[in-house]
Image 1 (cartoon, rainbow, N blue to C red):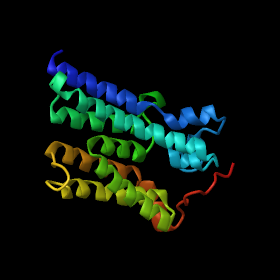
Image 2: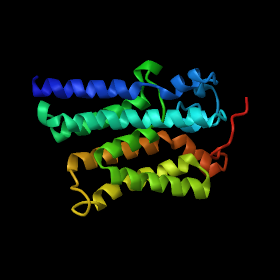
Image 3: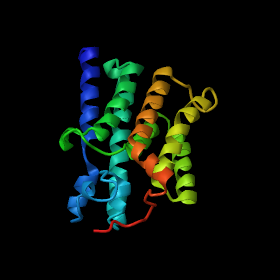
Length: 211
């Protein structure tokens, strides 16, 4: 297969994988209210948790993270066979992330990409994902705000990747910049949450939906 064609196909498939709305699928399977109709209106694990169903939220979290990991893992694994460049792998990572944010199955709307981003980091470098996830957990436990934890973790992720250069892994420029871009987009998608945090009206973790 032509290298350019293989890259384009990988990017398209990554976007389609990212578009799979696990929050919607899980909510339907458990007979829950559509997560887009309550709380933050975000089809993601945190909002599904507001329904009070922890298993549904956990499955949503795993599904969203898995699709991010799978797309990038496959691109890396088959890169030699299809002559995929590092730039192509970076674009696959970006495509699966954007697929979650702007799902073709949800009229180009979607979640905020936190779990999918963690899955992407896990495929790039497991210890990078562990450090980023640990940051999320620490902030979430102490402050009880999922959005704040996501924002702080997003800020630190590029620094963790760069800090690991020649210590635990080699920092690839194309990957570094795509991690930076994903972090910036993730923070931008939390702009409403930032306003709510400053106003003191942001919902805390574990707070159930009132409907």
